[in-house]
Length: 119
Image (cartoon, rainbow, N blue to C red; front, side, top):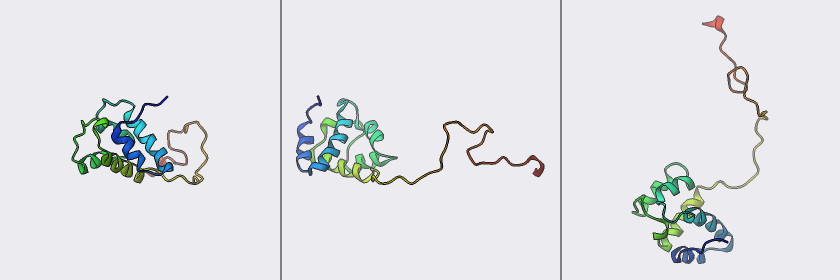
């Protein structure tokens, strides 16, 4: 059984379409799994690079802010930021086939050592 969302998160979720609301639930669930944890580390796990820090700065929030302290507008803003950094699902490009074994000659697959006679 999942936890109920705080009032501000519920208000933000109510403004979204049904498909967006399921994505919002994933974000909110990840951030509210430990509601007393500060947002800084939580956003580092959810947003790539410095996107979480930049979002906190645009909202004038310190990294020690708790997820339960966010207002509805901040939840929506965070959700839009999170959506903009999510990978778009689609067909995967076929990559080189690799066995599960590492290269036995000490180089990456396909790499060649520099011949010693050329030094």
